[in-house]
Amino acid sequence: MQNISELIGWIIGLIIVIAWIGAWIATFKQAGYSISYSILWGILMIVPILNIIAFGVFAFREWPIRKELATLRTRCGVAVESDAYLVMQDALRLELQGKTPEALLKYQEIATRFRGTGAGNDAEKSVTALQKTVS
Image (cartoon, rainbow, N blue to C red; front, side, top):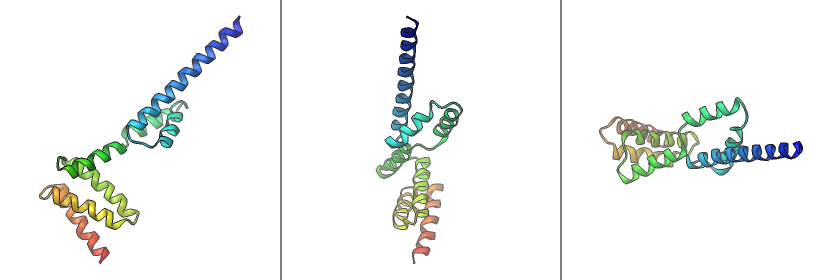
């Protein structure tokens, strides 16, 4: 009889762990991360100590969905200046990867849509600097 109770306890524990991992995977997916990334980080959420570190990284890192939203808001003309800076971070990432034409387009879009603001001025400086390196 005790073996059955113990087995039921293990099964219930396993179900709880699987549900916990599944909830974290769903959370990472909602934040815009890929499925493989979400599964990896979901599994890390059951490892003591690493789960605290993973949660901290997740909580304070810029989420892909936020970057995508900033890009879409900018294209639609309803972005705020903080959105512009997120798009410029993406442009900088492209620039560092050697994808200068793509980065230049993003900078130009911000410079045009945010003319006269801090973000617009920063984007104009980036456009000027990139054009000098391309020439």
